[in-house]
Image (cartoon, rainbow, N blue to C red; front, top):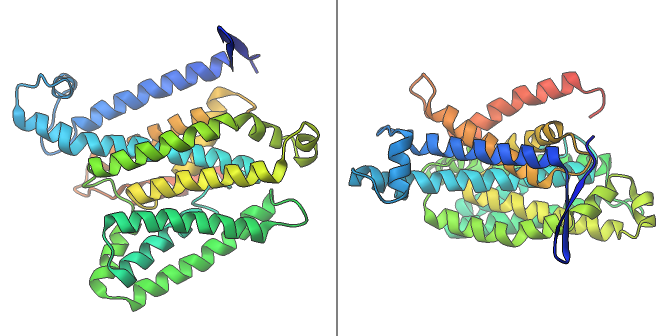
Length: 343
C-alpha cells in the first residue's frame, strides 16, 4: 500500500494516496465518456462531436439540441447522481456492518424506502413529489428501526445489523406484496413500474432535488470519513482513540440511508450498485480506508454503463435500469460468494 501524501494549501492540508487519486481521476474520465455516449444513444443517434456541439449550444440541428438538453441530459445526470449516492451509501453500510453484503438493497433499507412510496401510490394515489418524499421518510424510519433492534448492550454493528436488516427487509417486502395484490389494478401496475427502477422520462425536476440533497449530505459523509476508518479497527480501539462509536455509527447510517432514499426517490429501487461499487473501488485503489469518494465515482460509472448496455442490447427490449442492474448484480453476488471465504 502506498503511503499517503500531504498537499498543503496555506493553513489547509489534505492527505491523499496517489493511487487512489489516480483511480478517482480515471473513474471521473470514464464516467464522462459514458455520459457522452449515452447522450448520443437513442432513436436519433448522434456522434460525440454532435453531442458536444449541442451541449455548447453550437449544434446545427435544433431538434438534436433539444433532445440532448431536455431529454437525454437529465437522464444522464440523474443516473450519475443516483449511482454516486448508492456507491457512497454502500461504502458506509459495508464499513459499519463490517460485511461485504452490508449494502442497502441487501439489508432492507431500499425496501423500506420503497414501502413508503408504495403506500402513497396504492392508498393515496399520490403524485411523483409525494411519492419521493414518502420514500425518503420511510427509508429514514426503517434505518432507525433497524438500528434500535440491532442494539445489543451498547453496540449495534457487525453481523447483527445485517441480520436484523434482512429480517426487517423481508417483513416490509411482504407488506409491499400485500398492498400490490389487494390494491387497485391500475395503481398496482404503476407501482410495479416504479419498483422496476427506471431512468426513463427523467427531467430537471428529478435532477435538481437529487443534486441539492447530495450537496448537503456528501460533505457530512466525507467530513466524518476518518472516524469511519477508525471504526473499522473495532469499537474498543476506536473508542480509545476518542471516537464516539454509537453516535458516529448512527450518524453515518442516517447519512447512508439519506443517500439511499434520495436515489430511490429519483429513480426507484436500483440493485447491485451499492453492493459492487465500493468493493470494486477498494480493489482498484488498494487503500485500507473506506472508499467514500472512489465508491461514489464507481457507482456512477456502473449505473451509466448499465444504462448504456440496456439501451444498446441487440434485442428490441429496452429493459428498466433496475432490472438490468439486478440481473448483473445476481451474477456478481454469486461470484462474490464463491470467491470469498468470509462474507
